[in-house]
Structure formats: C-alpha cells, structure tokens
Length: 207
Ligand SMILES: Nc1nc2c(c(=O)[nH]1)N(C=O)[C@@H](CNc1ccc(C(=O)N[C@@H](CCC(=O)O)C(=O)O)cc1)CN2
Ligand SMILES: Nc1ncnc2c1ncn2[C@@H]1O[C@H](COP(=O)(O)OP(=O)(O)OP(=O)(O)O)[C@@H](O)[C@H]1O
Image (cartoon, rainbow, N blue to C red):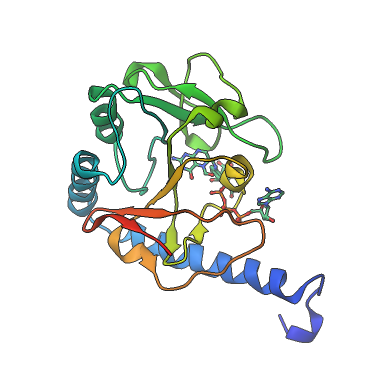
C-alpha cells in the first residue's frame, strides 16, 4: 500500500501492526520448517531448565503456563515436571467472544484437558477467573519471538497483554533459540516480559 494512502491515526501504530504481521509470518515459517527431532529435543531441553531456574519453582509456588500446540516450543512434560515439584500450575481458558482477559483453571494431568476454540487444549476444571493471576508467582507466556528489551510477539489477538496488565509476577516468554532477537516492533499496549526461556540458553534476563 502506498504510504500516502495509509490511515494515520498514529503513524507508529499503523507501521507497528504491519511490521508485527510481517514478523509473525517470518517466525511461523521458521517454526514450520523445523524437524520433529529438533522440536522434541527443544522440548526436552526446556523442561530441564526448570531445575536451574533463577527463581524458586517448587512447592508452594504457583505458575501460569500454557499447553503448546502445533509448532509452539515445549510439551506437556514441562507441566508435569512442574507438577512433580509440587508447583501449582494454572492454564489459560480463552473467554467467549472478542479478546478479553484470559480465564484460568488448574492443570491436573493430561486427562483433565479437552480441545476447544482455535484447536487449543484447555483444562476442564473449575474456572478461577482472570484475577487468579494475582496469586501467581511466574507466568510462562507463549510467544513467536521476544527481543532483548522484553518486547513479546504473540499470536496477535492481545489476550496476554490484556491479562498481564497490573499483574506482579515474573513474566517468561518461551521461545526457540533464534527467536530471541535484538529488536521487535512495539506498541503501547505491549506488556514487557522480564525473561526469555530458550532451549539452548535457559532463562535469559531481558533489559
Ligand atoms: N498454546 C497456546 N495457548 C494459548 C495462547 C497461545 O498463544 N498458545 N494464547 C495466546 O494469546 C491464548 C489464545 N490465543 C489465540 C489467539 C489467536 C488464535 C488463532 O489461531 N486465531 C486464528 C483463528 C483460528 C481459528 O479460528 O481456528 C486467527 O485469528 O486467524 C489462537 C489462539 C491463550 N492460550
Ligand atoms: N490491554 C489492552 N487493551 C485493549 N487492547 C489491547 C490491549 N492489549 C493489546 N490490545 C490490542 O490487541 C491487539 C493485538 O495485540 P498484539 O498484537 O500485541 O497481540 P499479541 O500480544 O501478539 O497476542 P496474544 O497475546 O494473543 O498472543 C492490538 O490491536 C492491540 O492494540
């Protein structure tokens, strides 16, 4: 589209969204090209890092995590490793209708999951409400990429930005090694994450 024809509510926002769409396509294409072996190796490595996390991940800690689907990094063994350490694990439940803060329910094993909207695997247990995040110590956030300043690129519906605003917890974006990059497009509503978790380097503190 010629620059002169673009709507200019704020130049930054318009460019930001187009730039994000482009980066999403790039990251998704790279994920699609990974072999099953690479994905499984990465998932195993991600689970290992739980044992050397820079914050406590053991009994009496509550984390919010997610069930990876498709080419997303990680696996159920990540959640099982946390559960084995008596960490309480909450999982997101997408609310009906337009994007709004995520609801949450407890993870209690693979049998407590079912496939729902967008093909996501979600927990079937009691819904705890969006405020459940107020009692969480660490949030593992799905991401297509993250930059050194903590800018996270998600799927583009804004569910996590809406959910994390005002929450005091460690935010950890889980990505493949080459998805921790120098710079990503940023919008004012983007909530910064303090950490990246990568298979090769583990927990990386962001600026
Ligand atoms: N594993 C996982 N769980 C997660 C997220 C995630 O990124 N990964 N989310 C992170 O926010 C939330 C769900 N967000 C989503 C946002 C958009 C689409 C999506 O694929 N939208 C397509 C429509 C696909 C369809 O209708 O089947 C689209 O908008 O084109 C899926 C999930 C909560 N749970
Ligand atoms: N707190 C918020 N309140 C209202 N709108 C928001 C908020 N956060 C994000 N949005 C809007 O949601 C849309 C998608 O945001 P963005 O591209 O940052 O999503 P994302 O972080 O990639 O997606 P997700 O969190 O679902 O993985 C944007 O139009 C953004 O302006």
